Structures are given as structure tokens and as C-alpha cells.
Amino acid sequence: MDSILKIEHLVKTFGTNEVLKDIDFSVSKGEVISIIGSSGSGKSTLLRCINMLEEATGGKILYHGKNVLDKQIDEDQYRTKVGMVFQSFNLFNNYNVLDNCTIGQTHVLKRGKEEAKAKAVDYLNKVGMGQYINAKPRQLSGGQKQRVAIARALAMDPEVLLFDEPTSALDPEMVGEVLDVMKDLAKSGMTMLVVTHEMAFARDISSRVIFMSDGKIEEDGTPQQIFQSPKSERTKDFLSRFSG
Image (cartoon, rainbow, N blue to C red; front, side, top):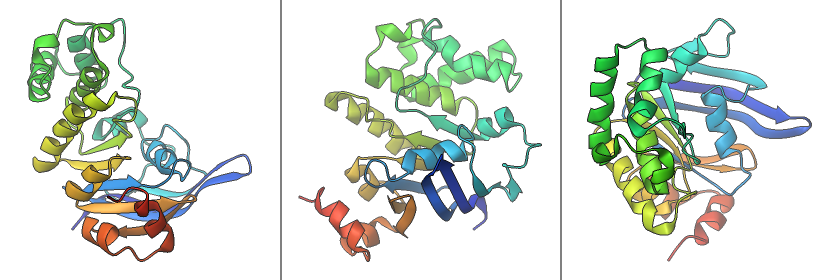
């Protein structure tokens, strides 16, 4: 399978603190990869480096074979293809839901207003937020905001969607509505890279699970391998806290 993304020897340091240590893995079309691990293991930093929100210290991030860390890449164009859904939604509070989902399309993709609106409405309907197009973010629950954020990312026609702990800022009763949208996306064949603490999602929905520990990939395998017969003691220890 051709890789959409290939991460090679990726390193990230903050001062003297090496947060990512020689990370290697690839992402193929249609894969749903869950990245799990304790807080501070480097999971979110990895996503932020892939999305170029953090500058990698070393290594390569290849998108269809082209290293995006080369300075001549257009970051905005790259980010339309490798979209990101954040823990804290990152919606524009002064825009309504519809405008939140069209502004990137018109500014970055240079789509016409009508086409952008049609695409936004289509995805807002898909995530169950079609009736809220005129609402401002402050009028929405956390789960609703996150579903709008997912629709906004999808409206850019990404090849890969990165999710950075998309449910961790939500009240427990709202987690399900966001996970349901993500499950539907996974079923539709969307390529997804998900940093998550939702072990049931990682186990049941992913095609692959990566367990990170101390800035390194400790283990990478199918959900069955990772959850039923992990090789590493660190993986076993981490999962034992979630079992039962």
C-alpha cells in the first residue's frame, strides 16, 4: 500500500528535553490509527509536528514522498490535506457555525461562497449539526462544538484527519456523540490518526494501534495484538490500568 504519510527518524526537543525520540511509522490510505500512552509520552507533540504547528528538530515527514519540512512547502495548502481536530475545538467565537465551516474554504481553497456553503451544510448535516448553522459557538455544548470542528475540517477535503484527544475536554455524556461521528468517518474510509484516551475506540474502531512511552513508539500493531497480547512490559502495565 502506498503511504500518504511517512514519518522517518522524527525528533523534537524543547530546550534540553527530548520529547520525541527517533519516531518512525507510516500512514496508508483508509487506516484508522489510534495513538495511546500516558500523558507526557509525546502523543500530542507528534500530531502537532505532523501538522506543522510545532517545528520538528530533526527527521522527515513525507507526504506522498515529499518532505514537508523542506522550507518551500506551502503550510496552509498542506494543512488542507492533513487536517486537524483539536481538543479545545478552536472555533472562531465571533462567527456563526456556517461561517466557521466556510472561511477556510474561501480563503485557503479559494472556493466560491455558494460552493463553500453547500459543502459546509452537507458536512454539518452529516455530523448532526445542520439545524445549528446560524448559532454562535457560545450557544453550543462542547460536544456540538467538536462536531462543528469535525465538519469544518472535512469541508476542506482532507486526505488525512488528525484528532488530538478530541473528547478529553468534553463532559462524559457528550463523549459518545463525538465518538459516533468518528466511527462513521472510520467506516466511510477516512484516513485518521487519533490521539485518544478512549480505549474502547482504540480497540474496536482502529485498524492499528500505536503505544507511545517516553517519547518513543514502544509498540505498533493491530488492536488485537496490542490489547490481547502486548509484547512490551510498558504496554502491559499501561493497559492493565484500563482493563476490566
